[in-house]
Image (cartoon, rainbow, N blue to C red):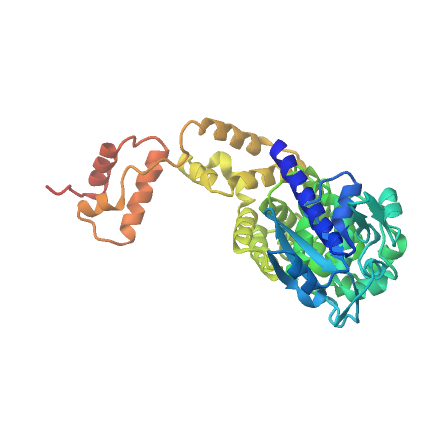
Length: 449
């Protein structure tokens, strides 16, 4: 923690130095955007952006290490003391033609620059030399009132960049702020247009919303705004999908999933959070009622895993994130069978890299519904029991040993190795010699020489 504070202090000192250098050359320069919001809230900003009247070419001449990330938009990255600072020239924007970026920009004053930003709490500047906030948009009052308010006309702000619709929900979630009524009305009115922007940008905001400790608040805002329906129709479809009341007194699948999100710890991995979101999306398409009037969801885990892969691919998640989440969805019904598993199968099940997250998924799945924690407790006990040695120990026999017994390369070798490992995991084969003798006897083989 002390090292983190030192790094934070060095970052702010370095940012102050960037401003001071710009000022010494006769330019106006301030901290800008989210860093000002965070500083006013008493939080250390993750990064500090600088806004200035210096043109991009002047910024590049002034600092020895720079690169342009958006020279057309007047943005130059300055590298100092191992930190990166985006130094942007004050600008006003021309017409937005693609719902993402302006067709042209004009270098402008600080006040005009503030007016083109998204929300008032992100539209303030800070002068570190004078230790003063420069606020043209009423951001400080909204920060104190804990309000998310679009700068100017909300519909115009959202038409300029559709992502701002989702950003309003993200800020309201993460900061636990309310969305001001006219801004909220515009969010609802424009929610269905969110898919006009790239899947990658949508994914980034969704991840920030659901990885927040306030993820349930984010769920509710996405739901009531219509953004859930637009972005995750597979989750929206869980509304009204009834479940057997003896196992799910909490009601439909949508409510069940919301309760599970609320039961997660504040810090949770991405695959865990999104496996909670998606673990039952296979229920609506598999719902049926049998001849005895019982609600069934046959194969919903398999169908849900396929749907999860499709949704996450659509939103451009990484392959590793998709694989871990899909595995958790596919396996979540296996937990009901763990007390009846052979020891070898149980150990293999528990040795998988996704097991810890899957166990947590199982916990919240049970707690949010029937409340029966027997299998969860059983697995925790087994985890302690198996903790003294590797759950999957080094193999007693390898492929080379089987080749030495006269076997030819092929699937039979894999079969035998698995059979040996099964008996090793169950404790009936304890060393290499026992394992080789068992293979010779079981498969009528003889060691050469």
